[in-house]
Image (cartoon, rainbow, N blue to C red):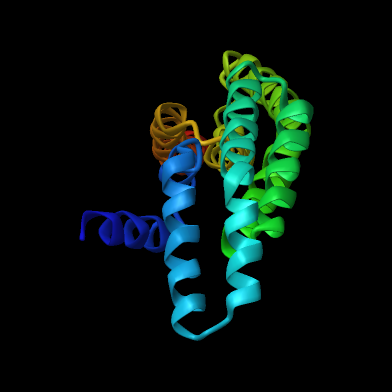
Length: 202
């Protein structure tokens, strides 16, 4: 059935942060998961457990979906600490309905988002470091291109963590050009040494 397919899609998408976070904002999908579990419990004659799950299914899916929506809104507005708090609260609601995979996902997302302020602070520091190096490069100190690689690598990691695909792409181009410049600088240094050697012989 279409309902079974929907449940299966959600279960299979557990590793996809964006798709799962979006689906968890729909209480109907959460209710469908609970309904499937309730049916299994009834088939296994677990009547008491099924009743408890039915009771929880009355309001928990709505609360959970609302909490995820709030968390995503905080995230969108860069209120990372509030977003973390809401994701963790949503995780607790998932524990109530014994959806451990969903609870784990929301807990991990909350902890991940909670690291955003530190990552952004580190990024500012790295940007200043790169700005300083590029400023010194204007004085023709070409060997400094090599010093750009490590901070750019870290900026790429930070952008990946912040799920900024477009910026990650730009940073990859920046890194590739810095690597090319490093190779050219090495070649130029080699030529410079040869020229100096030539000069001593004339």
